[in-house]
Length: 147
Image (cartoon, rainbow, N blue to C red; front, top):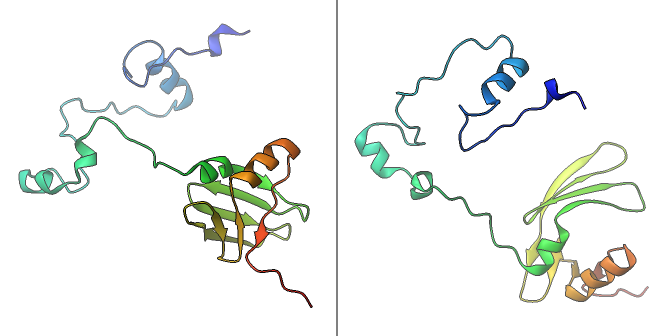
């Protein structure tokens, strides 16, 4: 292992350890230093009245991810189907890319026991458990049409 390319960094203490050296190596043209006396950023501005109106989350030290249902949690990530389309699931949105390059974004809906695809297909916890076991997720149609 070439130890000259390893860096010990801390996002909590950016001036400590190897962060300054890493920034200089990654961005060799970056000469300007950050101003430690600059006012704190708030999305509504820095004037007193605007700071008071800023969303409370901007003044909180913690950021919490959204709480997802068991089914939506299990869907997170990247999936591929037998037609070689890719599905990237983030929270309750799905970015779909077909093999021909066409793409779309859709939003899942859910009720107490199911997650729905376009209101026509659903999965439940049983489908998720089967997907873990057989490595295949099967959506169930809301109504079976016989023809």
